[in-house]
Image 1: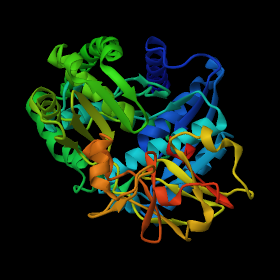
Image 2: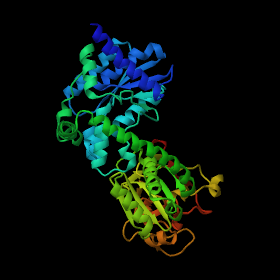
Image 3: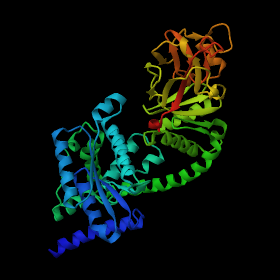
Image 4: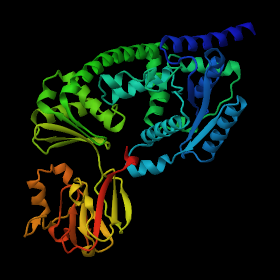
Amino acid sequence: MKGLFFAMQSFLTQVSEFIRSHRLIKPGQRILIAVSGGKDSMALLHALIYLRKAWSLSLCVVHIHHGIRDEEADRDERFVMDSARVFNLPFYSIRVDVPCVARETGCSLEETARNLRRAAIMGILHRIGFDLVALGHQADDQSETILLHLMRGSGIRGLGGMTPMRGCFIRPLLFVLRQEIDAFVADTGIPYREDSSNQDRRFLRNRLRLDILPSIRDAFGNTVTHRINRAGQAAGEVDTYIRAETEDAWEHVAIRETSREITLEIDSFLSYFKIIQKSMAALAIEKLTGFSSFLTTEGYERVLRLAEKGKSGAQVLLDQKARVIRSGGNLVFMTSIPALKEYRVGKNSEIRIPELGLTLRVTESDPGIPEDLKRHDRYTEYADDDKIKVPITVRSCRAGDSFIPLGMKGRKKIHDFFIDEKIPIYRRRVVPLLCSGKDIVWVGGYRMDDRFKVTAWTKRVLKIELLHDPLSG
């Protein structure tokens, strides 16, 4: 019995020391624990409960139901809820439809689950005002991650694997082998759930864990996990230095940043060593999408070739998340925006245009000419209300589209207007055209049609606004 006690105490002491040495937690912090119900997350839950009093921690449990395993997932959810109740911990469960989102986005189930899980957890963290999110990744997960990135052709950043702490996410068990967690759970009688999807060899990570890694251990011994992870740690240390250098370079290279688009000046970009160029490309992707690990060595090389030799208008598609376009002397990193759909809106109403991160608002004014008519910006326009038919449609340009630009007498093709306004090719398909029937009223953000302008004979004015949508980030 004493041996069992000391084994348990040794495990928990090691966890405590790992937390302390990596400064993962400060006394008094509030920690949201992500618990799936499996061995790793249940070991994490019990370890943090053990440390709760000594560190004056406030704990809360969150569980993500992925909508994949039906009744089995429902039972996992109830199990985690009951486990939280045993320790009188607040419990939150979030349901996401991974298969549906994966079909809509074209991403894999694994990637979709990871992205939705992270977003859901961050939503809960902000809602309840906690400080940290504790994740149950352990040493074998780390070696799997490093090998996956290696086989996918990742650069230094991906080979660094997971870090003990990144932002508000902490991994207190990252040093612990899977077999050590198995022993701790067995010795202490901690209940847990088995996830049947972990045996599904359709998932690459499962094939790696079930088939490839055992062969590697047979060839190189059981300590190979720690050796892989030490190599990953070394890569991570190099990446930390490169990141610091990249932040300094970024100040001289980035000339425009929005939530959907980042522009880098090519001459400045090319003046740095290639490793910094690649790191800047990764940082741009990370800023836009939240992730950079999907950018492979081949992807980096394509971006660098675009900067060195690409023609204006040439582009590189990076997975389904982002693209890089050469526009004159600039590299433009963009989130992949779907083609603009057609929307309809009535007067005195509004509609979201999620592809653009904008909301279109249409408002009839009181009779007469509004005082602010001459003070509006490019995203606000005024038209003669009586000349506008409803519904107003919003769409992208089509072949043969033309209008009469404000101040002109004759028609001009939209294609020629885009050229004259120096609108880059990659932006043209998402410029919103507001139409009344078959006529274009306003090239959103640029020019309205002369036929719909407000005149001295206008009885009522229609105010049209394109507003930034706070839901788009």
